Length: 244
Ligand SMILES: [Zn+2]
Image 1 (cartoon, rainbow, N blue to C red):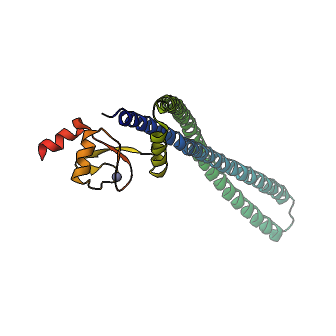
Image 2 (cartoon, rainbow, N blue to C red):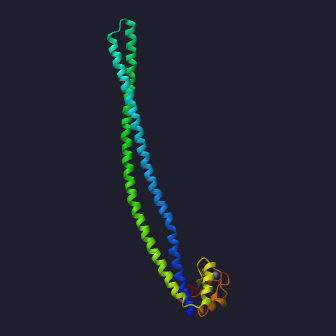
Image 3 (cartoon, protein in one colour):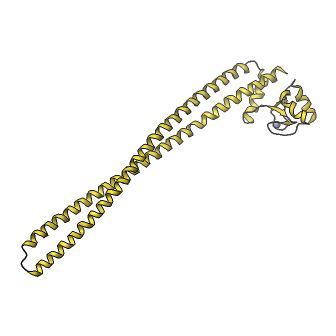
């Protein structure tokens, strides 16, 4: 194989490794944001549950105040009942007492309802606290994994870029310039395999003469369609050839 072609194949491989690592690193901020959003969701669920419990306790305190007021009115009526002079006054007082007793009963029912609701709401707060704690642990672990991966990818990218620089030093300026130009224009891929009679990147059919030349791997041949540099891998090409 032409030494420059062999170097370009390795250069492409390093370039792809660095690109993949950088692409992976670029997705990390969105992943971190998604973790933060999950955590926010759990926190706000807990806030809501706490708020509902507080509202319930507040209205229960109000009801207790109101029932106390009615009860004190009721005791006054009962005292006054002793000192009424006429039957008419007595009946009017009895009516007031009945009304107040009815009110007390109705408040007590509402207080009982609020107490039952409070148990449910307190349980919901406990559940939300447990969910938040579980989510915090999960998310922390995921965050660590992502950070480890970031480190691994950064190291891989650096290693590939360092090796690329060394290798680039061994390639003639003109050839390297061609490589860089194609990489830039063609989405980071400048060197590709010819496989099954096609350019494996743009899938255009190669003319038989071009294919024969590419098979020799002894000079730089660009795909007539996409301009990428072609090479032929005898090991990979053997299988389809045997089938044909
Ligand atoms: Zn092509």
